[in-house]
Length: 371
Ligand SMILES: *[C@@H]1O[C@H](CO)[C@@H](O)[C@H](O)[C@H]1NC(C)=O
Ligand SMILES: *[C@@H]1O[C@H](CO)[C@@H](O)[C@H](O)[C@H]1NC(C)=O
Ligand SMILES: *[C@@H]1O[C@H](CO)[C@@H](O)[C@H](O)[C@H]1NC(C)=O
Ligand SMILES: *[C@@H]1O[C@H](CO)[C@@H](O)[C@H](O)[C@H]1NC(C)=O
Ligand SMILES: *[C@@H]1O[C@H](CO)[C@@H](O)[C@H](O)[C@H]1NC(C)=O
Ligand SMILES: *[C@@H]1O[C@H](CO)[C@@H](O)[C@H](O)[C@H]1NC(C)=O
Image 1 (cartoon, protein in one colour):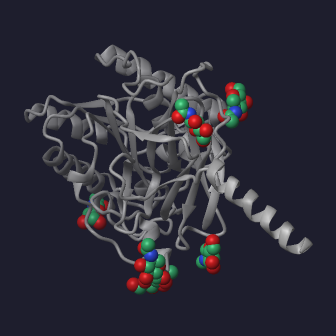
Image 2: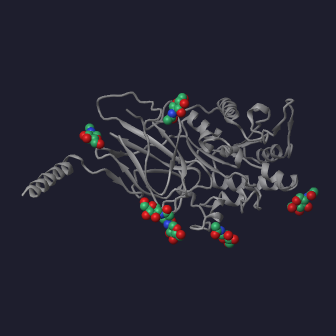
Image 3: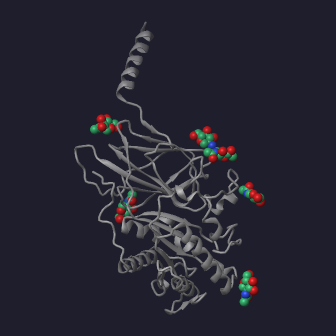
């Protein structure tokens, strides 16, 4: 009898529990309200650093990501920015991951339901996440995310990927200038890659090939997905401005100046076919700063000449951005070329000024307003 009563009470309580604790809201990866950016494969697997998605959610109090078994093991660092605040680093893995939302929110509290923007990206070039479910609190409602009118496409190598920075791409100048201008970034950048399509630092292809592919060159080291496929550029949120910087690895791997001249020229021709009207900014490298204030340079005058020829031949929408002198010995790591956090901030500030002088102004606000 006693055990019957206990069981009866327990089941009543369980019933009450089910009524009160409404089940969490599950969002599947094919939900059109998820604003994907970067390059994703057909299994909702991410490729390239900076690839991710943005969510706009009303009454958000908890967020978990359920990731599939092909997610890079043992874990993947993702950047999480709440309401366009600073990027926090969160390690996620195969299975269910609670994403802290307590980061640096720009929204002040209010008694009415507020909406929250969460931006998520993968930091390291060789990492993939496979999205299976997004799990929100029961009362949350997924809303449409309206992207910025500005969209920056970055094409480059480790000098653009934030190589050696603790938070990699999220500390790198492309993300910094995108946040500054309130632009949607797309960072198709591959550390170690040459522009020329040759094997460089383990990259089985150069940028001149891999940029047109869905997968980053890390596909070659991925037993679950050891192949590469053409990227369908119609899937991109159309970029408004193109940033390019490459050639440092070509120099290391002994591509000569005549050859890199041809490589630059042909690559810009291909970019122009893809992006007929967008300004293309070709950044020189900053060289190797020395302690005494001098610099070591390579391919001197080559990129300058290629850009001048393009302009002389009628493409007035390609611009040389000379970064020489923008960073010094204190701004780079011991390898004398990769920017440290101070150097990244300096480079970003110089580039922001350059772009403002050129005529680009930051958006007044992000179109998906919060609160
Ligand atoms: C992934 O996680 C699930 C449970 O969440 C587990 O069953 C599976 O063995 C894991 N797979 C790998 C490859 O770690
Ligand atoms: C919040 O901002 C502070 C200061 O800028 C920083 O030290 C901290 O790491 C940030 N926290 C998160 C979660 O982003
Ligand atoms: C917000 O969500 C919580 C549960 O997560 C729910 O109890 C509450 O009623 C929701 N508020 C509104 C205004 O929808
Ligand atoms: C990927 O395939 C190539 C042959 O095409 C092979 O040499 C390489 O070892 C493979 N990588 C993995 C991780 O299996
Ligand atoms: C995960 O990898 C296996 C091969 O190991 C593959 O058959 C499967 O399609 C992959 N899953 C996804 C979602 O890509
Ligand atoms: C430069 O490299 C190209 C391609 O490898 C080669 O054909 C050419 O002879 C080289 N030129 C010089 C001056 O070394």
